[in-house]
Amino acid sequence: MDMITVLKALSNEKRLKILQWLKEPQKNFKSPHCDVASDGVCVGLIEEKIGLSQSTVSQYLSLLQQAGLIVTERRGQWTFCKRNEKTIKELTKKLSEL
Image: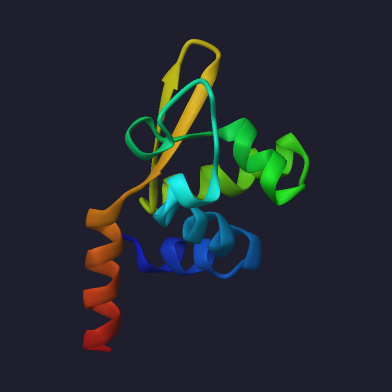
């Protein structure tokens, strides 16, 4: 885990909000096309909820993915996002050691 990249990813209020929403996807997102808890959350739903442009959301998600905080899966034309709980747990442990 690259702590600088992780901390950079967490240094933005909107990226933190996305990470928070992904913690409880079924509470924060509704989709008639998939089960957000097991499949992940479609990028389009995140764009809609956060109210930012597609390109900005893509950049935010890319940084969260580079930091290892989320994982994405492409299925056809859709990209689904989930939190990477393993990395988040590791981050929590490292921060508590500081």
